[in-house]
Length: 207
Image 1 (cartoon, rainbow, N blue to C red):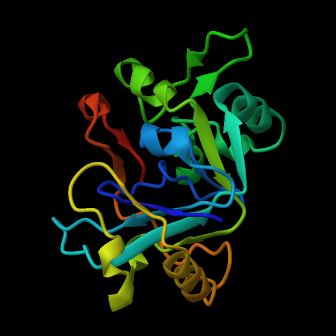
Image 2 (image 1 turned 90 degrees about the vertical axis):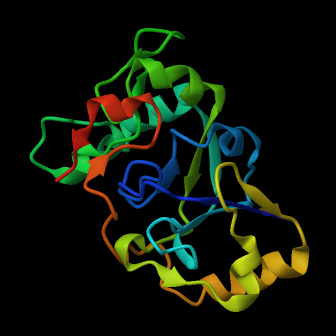
């Protein structure tokens, strides 16, 4: 039986989560969720209260695979090239890549140029895992309003909330599955990456 991990997505920039390439991934930020969530669980990001979007859903992903950072890097180098950041690319999606830890030289990763820098690495890697989903809904700047019965899912402030009551999980799944699967309904809300960590000192323009 799955559960729902809910948090406020304050900085929706197309990096965390990264909804491109037919797979929604959470590879950086939210280390506690990445460490604990399992296949079959949901991760949902609700809108920022500061932006007046607190009653909205920005994205929802049902976890279909959990990989280590090294496994994720191997997957990206072999198949999911779109997830490897190319910060000098003319393609905005390529600049948003979240596979920023390169294990091609061994078990000690080299950080690729991307949305995070060296002072983010300890926090990123503490999450141990990368979450992947081929069962997701990304709304971005077209965030949808949550039905009243799901408003208690929201977590105000930092951290996350876990919804374990199975009938609520089932009702949420039935509701969200009424939308078109694996569709990007909107664009990321922000065009500059700034997740609130030390990486804000070296902003990467994503437009």
